[in-house]
Image (tube, rainbow, N blue to C red):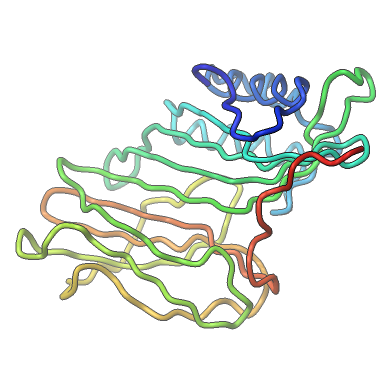
Length: 258
């Protein structure tokens, strides 16, 4: 990342954590997959079910579909738990994606909770051993003036509950015909939602406003809203976590004693 990892916390993180995150970002921006994976423990586990090899395949697939992504990141909070460090890290990426509907500009953001542990072979260095996605979103746009959309959606819902979805378009409807659709897609290791088949319908209001039923089983899925006018296309997607937890845990407190 240009300028390195940004520090967003009052208590400066350990140098080993800063070094590891800078290594990840710099390696990702130069498409050095080996350099990125060198920061992962052989025992790494992702809460979505991926192991180290699965993450490596997922990153390669993401780069294959988005050849010009650039990354940046910030440490939001951290704490020490015994020999481990637990940190909330937000990241952003920009680039483009080719699809059957043409080329799209991509902007995405993720908030993850990472657990790091000293490398047994080199205790001065950390390795990433566990990761949980707390929040994730992406925006794909195409055309000269795609719709400006604000997507309101909860981060976490209970299994089988009803939740509200609002996709509000800023531009007045009088300017052009507005088409829209909503889809649900499972979270997969291959990256962000694909721009494939959307059942577009004419919209009579300035966006899409719906009540939806969450899946009955815990998990995670992409909720995507596509809006199309005469001058462009916008695809807004959010990660919806289905869990018995009513809300995501807040940011981590200030560093605690080991």
